[in-house]
Amino acid sequence: MNTRWLAARVLTCVIQDGHSLTVALDNALKKIDSSQDRAFVQAICYGVCRYYHRLDFILSKLIDKPLKDIEVKALIMIGLYQLAYMRVKHHAAVSETVQAARHTPWARGLINALLRNYLRKQDELESQADSIKTASVSHPEWLIKHLQNDWPEQAETLLSENNQQPPMALRINRQKTSRENYLKLLATQDIAAQAISFCPAGILLNKPVSVDALPHFAQGWVSVQDSAAQLAAQLLDVQPGQRVLDVCAAPGGKTAHILELQPDLKELVAVDIDANRMQRVKDNLERLALTATLLVADAANTPAWSDGTLFDRILLDAPCSATGVIRRHPDIKILRRPDDIAALIAVQSALLKAIWPLLASGGILLYATCSVLKQENEQQIEGFLSMHDNAIELPITAQWGISSTVGRQVMTGQSSMDGFYYAIIAKR
Image (cartoon, rainbow, N blue to C red; front, side, top):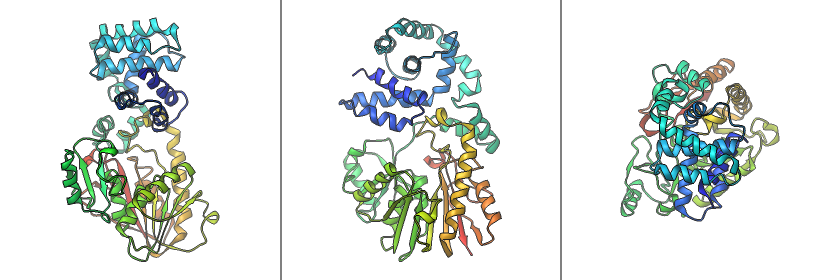
């Protein structure tokens, strides 16, 4: 299996067909036996998506008109990425990328010429890329403007953080072990890590590892979860005997954390519209030996799944632009469109309106997104509060994030966290 050709197929699925990088890559990696080759394909695919807008600009300077064949375009980008960012010998990067064009032999000469031309003009081309904003920060123009408008002082940092390799954080299942004990276990495996001060169950690894390398992962001692996502269960403040609703629950990390924190709930109901993603919730709970009521349904259509029994706590992890997790999912910069934001805002609003009647008086709704856009976050909640007299915001006082007009915003990279937003709403 030619690794560069396989990477080109993955990138074609993303660029041309609009598939997520995670899904396309997972399907491709199943075809590779060698762990080294899997890591190489993954590094190339993530790297090209991360620097897509910069590579696309450079390619436009190397060729007179846009390439219609997306697989050939992907191969050229793979070659450019190797030459600019990877420790691959130049002659190998060029020759192996040319050989990868096995299904498009007509393009081999073109690929060879373009990559060699890049090497001759590398300094000039990189300098030109640095002078164009979309290329220099490798983001689409619409997203740059959104970030600059929302966060004029933090925009440059956000753009830079989005292009960094994400850290790996763990959540200890304190029903199985203690954080101190697990840190000792990691040390015996030569895995350097440290406790996360604002997450009682959180551990930050000095560098990512395979889950197979994590002691007792299969036995449910630990889960992989960013520290920003770990804040949800803490903020929800669940108590024994309560009924909890987790809306848009997949893939189930927050669901599991709630159950780990409070094993004596009356019931936790997890709802998600996607059956395939709900299977991941089921798998996660089984690994952790946890139990919840799982419903595949459109949460906004409450008559279809709710019997009207009220909940003491509701977590709405709302569908969003995911602009706070671009460093984990760089294909967002390729796939997300400006029009998506308005559509997502409408979905968020509909979900809030639909589930609010299911919250008991005195109960708490926690609204969460992995977005850094104000329209989806504080502005969304301000609008909700203005239309519901029985809703009151409970301010979040914390050592993490920054206070918004409503709720609290975590900026991508802040304390090594993903970008996240939280707002706590109580019912009078």
